[in-house]
Image 1 (cartoon, rainbow, N blue to C red):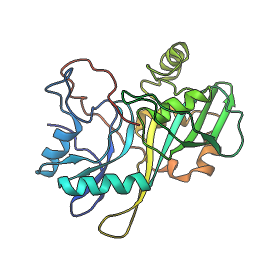
Image 2: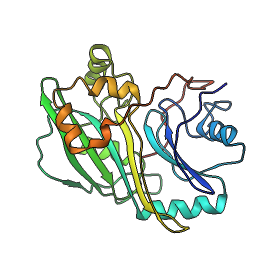
Image 3: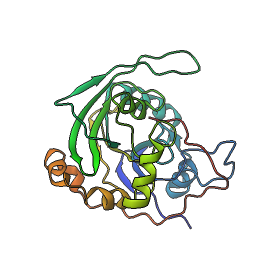
Length: 250
């Protein structure tokens, strides 16, 4: 039996879950029988569910799932006007001060798409050379967060597609970073039925174990106190029936 997906908030026709790492959002050609998020949450709630948005397979954190297709569309539109906040663990010492705006376009099969993100530093060190960033995408493009921090010359550690493979290997072998250093920390938006949603996902324990050893961790906690929430321990299987590439998401 699957380990239950943590539920962070619940409405009449939607839930916000803390997506675990290494679980795809929906089945695909490479994983036709996978225990994906859609199947897990459907079985957990006992009703059909619909994705409001997606996260990459190895990204953890806040994810909205609806139990009504029309509501899913309404929530998707509301989320586009709201705010998602990510924590990105990146290569190198982040030299920028304050909020940095990144507006490089994102390529897509339909052509180049405009994109905008705001990036600020939660903590940084020279030894080891790494930084923890807060990233708030203002648009929702394919791999936007990962591409935009790379454009600042600070790719996410553990990123096989946009990152530094040598540095990612060092962090995996010497520091225990076993996956992508990206976590969807918070979602804030107006709900279609009225009211305001503001929900934060605690870190998963695998990230917490790496981050709490960093020399700047206390500084990061001072800037973003929600990082001190008790971490989520996940022992569940990834449910994959075949290897797969990261799926589309932020």
